[in-house]
Image (cartoon, rainbow, N blue to C red; front, side, top):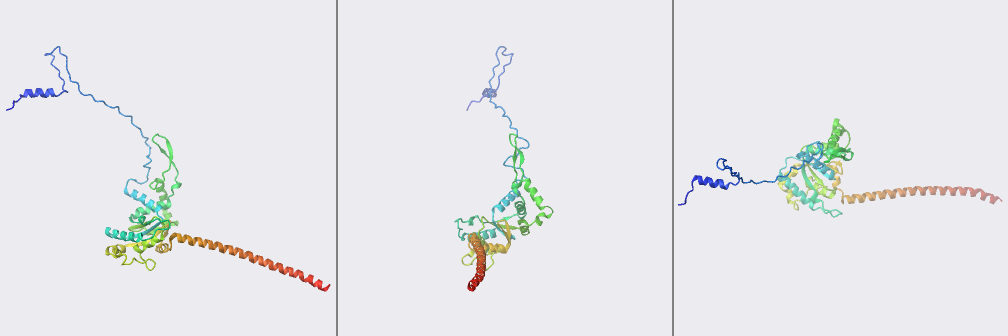
Length: 344
């Protein structure tokens, strides 16, 4: 059996292990002995750094002042819609009615297949991957259209902003969420001024009713527009639906149910609003924009040739008239002279 230590011995060992304890003998027991202490650890403490004072009116360049909260989802949607309207030259507007996710997937699948078969343009760039069909928030899209139509960022006056050093510099806050954009839209839409002045907004605003979806194109391509119309809004004989043998997935019940809930209401081309007939006219341009430009050049050349020939014809007719008049006058002068010669 192991030997056991008494409690007093255990307490003595524990007190010896603790090095930080200070031993102070009683003065009555060791009157002449000095006080022995075990030094504790010392840690170096760094001096507190000087605090950088930021001006109270300092505005970070990455977070300019806004009229609407910039960190909410609605503000991000508004900025994305304004960017979409400014960068998209061709857009189709559809109304949809309770389409399911499966129906949307089927419609996008058939649209992607139809667009992939369109040959690339004269520049050799295939724009089919950049064409997209997306659902939008109608109210926010309406506000974005107002900002694009009625707000001019180049007319915003600069304001003074404070930098970190306290210096005030001129800065222009002309983003879509700025106070200037908010005031411009309010000024344009108060008392029905927006409806009184003709603009793209007044033409497109009646179409922005109910749930909407837009089909965006990165460039104006009549061939891709015709392919999209044949899938999303077929209207024979100009835009017939795809054949069943070649596109069996188009006649799938899920895709057909989704297409029946999709309605084309209009479009926007280069900032101008077109109705359904206008979009059909754009999609029916044979050869695309290159062919349209060639026809325009031929028309201008023909007009120039016609004007030249008209001017030349007028000059020739005037010259002939003057020559005939001169010959008549010469014959009239020769008549009396010949008569005098014969008499003499």
